[in-house]
Length: 249
Length: 235
Ligand SMILES: Nc1ncnc2c1ncn2[C@@H]1O[C@H](COP(=O)(O)OP(=O)(O)OP(=O)(O)O)[C@@H](O)[C@H]1O
Ligand SMILES: [Mg+2]
View (tube, rainbow over the protein chains, first blue to last red):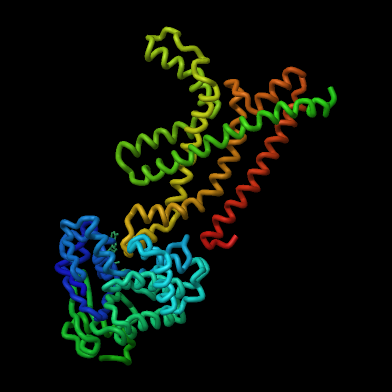
C-alpha cells in the first residue's frame, strides 16, 4: 500500500506540487493523467526521493518517511519497497540483461548468486526475454530494454511499481509489446502507479484514474466515471481534447 | 661522414640495457597517476569548495608548465628552496641531495596525475547519470552505484585516451637526460657524443621508441577491445 500525504515540491520559485495526497491500495492499479508540465513525473520522483519534496509524507507498507526529516537510510528502505520504470529504461549499460536483474538482488538483498539468477530468470521469462539474458542493453530494441527494466524492477519484489510514461519513447509496435508486458505483470496483483499518455491503455488496465493539473489532483475515480461522467469542468475539457471531435462525451 | 651500421650494432646493447629505465619512468608514473587521477576526479566532481579550487590549481600548473621545466624545478629548485626555507639561504643542500631518478619519477607522476584526472573526469561525466537514478530506485547506495555501474563504464570510455597518454609519456620521458637520468635517450646521447655519431645514435634510439610504442599499441588495442566487449559495444 502506498500513501502520499500533502506533498509539496518547489523548483526555484515555482511550486510544482501543491499538496498532493493519494493512496494506492494493495493490488490496485492507478493511472495518473494530465497535461504536460503538470508535475506528474515530479510526483513519482518524489515518492522514491529521486527528488526531495520540501513537505509531506510518503508511506509504503510499514515504512513512513517525512520529507522534512528524511534520512538516507530511511530513503533506501523506501526505495526497496518500490520499483521504478523510467521513460528511458535506464538499464545498466555495462551489464547484461541477466546482470541488470540480479544486480539489486545481489547488492541490495544480498542473495546468493544462484538464488538471484533463479529469480531473475523467472522474471525474464515473464517479460519474454529469456533468450536475451546474455545480451547487453546496447544490443536490444527499445521495447526489449523497457521489458528488461520492468523485470529488474519487479525482481526486487516491490510493494508498488511506479511507471513514468513507460512507452512514450517507443514507436507504436514496440509500445504494444511493452503494454502487453505491463498487463501481464498487473495480472499478478502487484500495485501500480502509472503516469501515461496512453489513455486507452490507462482506461483498460487501471482501477482508478487520477487527473492532475498544475500540481494538484483535480479529480479521481474509476475510469468509467472519469471518462464518461467527470464531475469537474477541467477534467471534462482535458478528456475532450484527447479525443477527436466525433467522439464527444 | 657516412652512415656507420657498425656503430649502431656496437651501441645497441648499452641503449637496450636502458630500456627498463625508460619503462620504469613511463609505467610507474602512469600507474600512480591513474590512482591520483581517480581520487581527484571523484573529489572534483563533488565540488567541495576549497578542495575544488586547490585541485584546479594543481591541474593547471602541471598541465601548462613544460615537462623539462618541471624537471629543472624539482632537481635544481627544490634543494635551493629547502636551503632558503631551512637554512636561511646558506647552501647546505646541493643539487645531488635529491637523486635525479627520484626527482624525475615524482615530477612525471604528478604530471601524469594531472592529465589523468582531467581524462577520467571527462570519462565519468560522459556516463549517462540516469543509471544512478535506476540504481537508487532499486535501493542501491551511491557508493555501490559508482563502484559497480558508473566507474566501470567510465574506465571503458577512458581507456583509449589513457593509453594514448601512456604512449605520449613514453616519448616524454626522453627529456630526463637533462637532469642526467640514464634512460634510453641519455645513453644514446652519451654514446653519440663519444663517437661523434649523432645520426646513428638517434636512428637507433628512435627505432627502439618505435618498437616499444608499437608493442604497447598492440597490447592496448587488445585490452580496449576486450573491455568494450564487456560492455556490449560492437568493435
Ligand atoms: N529538475 C528540475 N528543475 C527545475 N524545474 C523542473 C525540474 N524538473 C521538472 N521541472 C519543472 O516542473 C514542471 C513539472 O514537470 P514534470 O516533469 O513533473 O511534468 P509532467 O507532468 O511529468 O509533464 P510531461 O507530461 O510533459 O512529462 C515543469 O514545468 C518542469 O519544467
Ligand atoms: Mg513527465
